[in-house]
Length: 233
Image 1 (cartoon, rainbow, N blue to C red):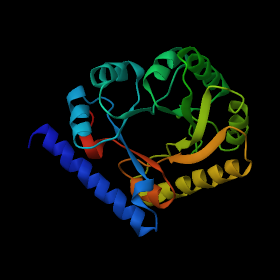
Image 2 (cartoon, helix red, strand yellow):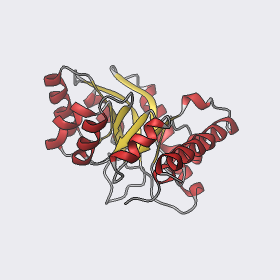
Image 3 (cartoon, rainbow, N blue to C red):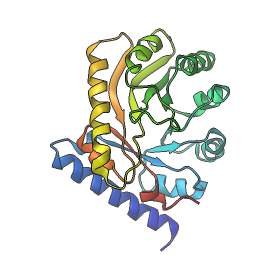
Image 4 (cartoon, rainbow, N blue to C red):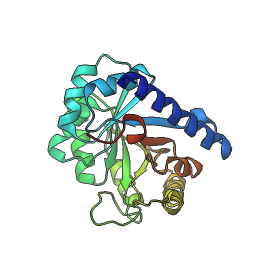
């Protein structure tokens, strides 16, 4: 099977699974959006996914994303950044990405705000939460997330839209479920504070191995790579 047809079939299969998970827990499938994660996959694979109906492309590395973005800039898709972002790459991220999922400090938020002001843009972001308190992972602690949201609310060109998490890896998605539920509960606590300029409508959680559990726990964005593109090259 040619690459384009294979990616199209996989994308359709993922969408069907997403819809089934949503309906199974009483949610509307149209309220959950797919981020097709293209990291390490070539421009041709990303173009095939877009042709098959992918509306959001997720990338983890700024330099790699620049090549793809420049090649596909005329395509009608959103670009999301889902990797660890260094402050010295903020200006490039602001140029390319509609939503940055991985803000975990006031320092990074302030630099994104500064670059967004220079670009005449309001940069949409999510706060990344380290739900598993894993030393090797980025993200603010759950306890510190509400205070970070309040700090970010003072930045005029940054628009916080919700939370993102990468829970610990488990072979069994049921073991990830408590982390998804914890992120939803944290979102609700922050939303209840009604911090000016802070939105909490987006929950970015769930990947190839556990996205159905994430949907059942309230995900609005799921980040799917290998189930669409195959294993990383």
